[in-house]
Length: 217
Picture 1: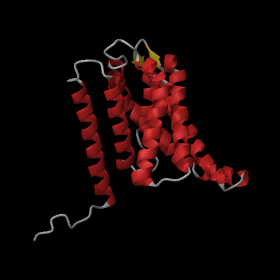
Picture 2: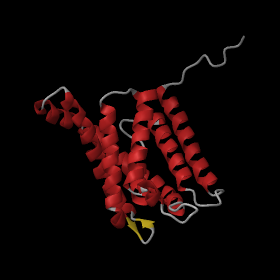
Picture 3: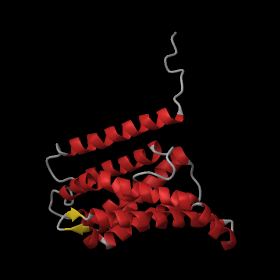
């Protein structure tokens, strides 16, 4: 029998394929959402969570560049902190358990993304003006959030090291923090408006209740 699948892609080819898959997923979400006749925030949150999981896995070859941080900030802005925390937990746990490796750092990633999502909720009035995302502000906010998230995750080494190790560890990781910040800025440009418009159209349930109210009841 012919073994048509017995070949391997180079890392560069693999990354191109992954980006193509992720782009197709974004296109499908944007197109599919238009066919949803009634406001359905829970479905949108499920799709956004799936996008975060796929983005984190598929973009793993890139150094600290993935769409999760920006997306969770948007969830915090539109759906408030309870849902941002929920998405953070699902993304961190599912991707680490199944694909990327699970350990004590998972809880720190969960905390880091939760803090970022809560901050997005707290500053929603500054980042969402007249129903529109303030892109320049969100780019700055997402860049700062990259450092905040990375430093919170880096704190996991304190479980078995002291502070004398922690500060050099932060310095050694600064380049990756910068990559995260630049990646976040790029994702704001690419995703903030289309995802923000979708979330804005699905902020309330069919019963007219805000999804943030559903989360707290």
